[in-house]
Length: 450
Image (cartoon, rainbow, N blue to C red):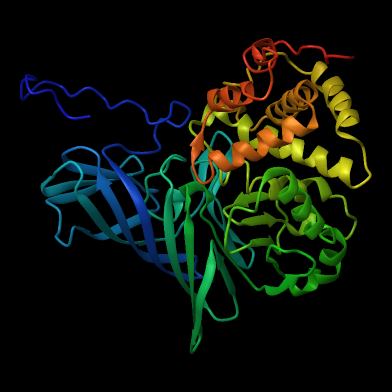
């Protein structure tokens, strides 16, 4: 926000409003990024990352200073803005602050180049460790919700979607995976350089980097390209646990709309155990413990795939709308179970309603608060809300609504009010009582016919 003209020069400047009250320290104002180009080098043995980030943006107001989110574990050596060194730059409170040499006018192009290096590590957050994590033999990035600055300078808010080119050089025995299409793989002596292009608009938290001793293969039986990246030792278990991945894709394309990414879908399994699977744009990351040959992770496999529509393509506008990601992906688990001959969505709704009834009734689904963003009640109550909406609309209207939702906001951002407004067009029955009971009240309502 620019300073009012009548403000005395020495007056204290009011703090800028938080970009998102759930993550008040993430995100920046004054510009909008359209593209990131990352040229990275990672040394596995020493956990050393060095890189150059080329960031293309447009000024939304006249700028004399800009800031980027960047973890304090990474040190900045050089900065250029529109081809020139800035007046100065400095790091403070996980921000890279840049004082420009001259004012950049509203609407002007802004090209920021940052050269940096360090030993990256995940950030400690309300939700545990988030970001760039060293594995026993490799590395992974879990970006949700604010882990992106642990490995590159960025404007870290889900509304700032951009395209990406990621070039990563690492030790040749390792496979490096990033988002998008693999454009090239160049082997030079002991190092290999991988270049990926992510064309579709992507928020920073869904950009990832995965490095390990992996093999890769194409999964058969799907019109959408699906590939697997995993340790060679887990190939037999993978064949059992992910045998229905293509059928899940076929079902979700039919129910939700065409798969939203041109480069296809990648399932990566790390050689380490992970507490939970992770979603990224076009990629789902599972731990070795999710690939044990028992088939016990089927619902998680469906859940992560569904995020490619709900969360990755259609992304929340603010973090309080997290149920639009997790409630929808949870309901996709129920739809897959119903399709695959397991418990029906209605049976699962009754089961989880009973479970929720025994838990504290203090969560507001439309605004759960940052500490409870990833509480399991958000997932299950969100799925129950959708199941009741399905009952009100009927299957034809309900799934037409979902396809409308994923098409209308494809590669964009939307909020709870957008979904409820869209749903209103699919019935003559007022839906406000449903929203009030399930989204805007903390008490758990009874199931309509329980």
